[in-house]
Length: 271
Image (tube, rainbow, N blue to C red):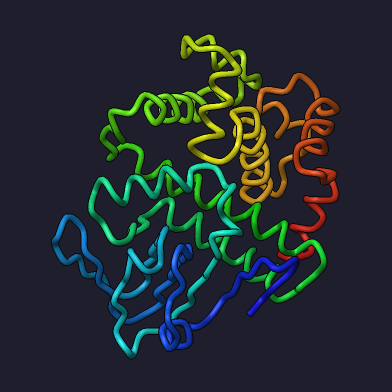
């Protein structure tokens, strides 16, 4: 068990993870290196074998059956650890609407998630004082990438006006985050007040619209840093819609509490 600030997170072998009862409301990412696995989607059994990646928003409600001879790893995150991560709520609703017990992550997203899981493993093994924050940052990126991969298959969440507004905002954010970085910009496009948008996002997802915007920009910056190690701060700033790197550097520091240059150095040390 890995534990800092009373927020548990752990990495286990598949055999070890399935030897103990699963916790309610626990998010799990299962990497199946070899062996067979199966889950239910719309009341139909879906089977897969070898080199597979599963995402389970709720470990009890979303079970994946794994053969005894299977090998791989299970990454487990408690509800307290994930409750303020954007889009976790969206994936939960996707599972419910599509009556699927798990999300099978496919390429090219699967390759990206596996790369980030390696970063999480490095942080887990280092057990440095900042490791938990870094693990949560990586998990935000994973959740966003998986959410994006299933968005093309989603139907409407609900007739609820609130959930409809949340969905519209998240879709607009994914399309416009490089150009629009203020709540008022999104509120105008969605024909609501900024206060109403912030309140609705807070009620449904646990964090405000402004926090969603900041986390979306920071997650993309970190993903670019992981994907493109040779990118300069200026190039990443330009990609994210900032006029100059000093503005981006200040934004990153204020939103994440970290210096971007130091963050890239940490990535290089973990590589």
